[in-house]
Image 1 (cartoon, rainbow, N blue to C red):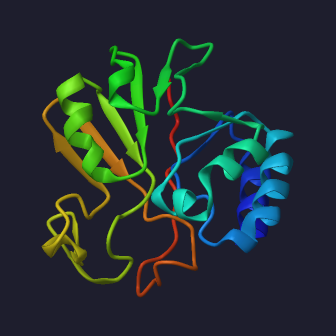
Image 2 (image 1 turned 120 degrees about the vertical axis):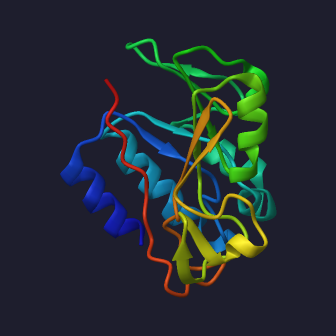
Length: 184
């Protein structure tokens, strides 16, 4: 999977790669992740927020070995354009801020803080899609409020990736995807 993603990123030549957490599902994938991050760091800057799987696999080790990443949960990243990328709602919102979070439920805090946009790492709770209806993916939407691609919560537009992992949780009719944003 990382090889496919590397090829796509090299072809696309992004200005920045944001990683929405769950970088590591299982501890034995660590070396491959480190090699991929080093390869991508030669292409463009990398920023990330940790996910629950990273904690299970050893977050301290992940952060220590991925020094090429700017960890948004530790400090916002301000781009030359003035766009401010934050990893926690408590870091404060401005009109030019985007909250990058792991779980879509973080949109409630993003909305209260006034973030205009939140990007979420992946659907949380169900990587199985039986059907889509009114912008929501089922059966996950029966259990999780933000189980779909896009939601408006107060002043905040939430964009949710279906994620790219293919280990845990198992995918059923839930194609891997990532968010591609062009900002002006």
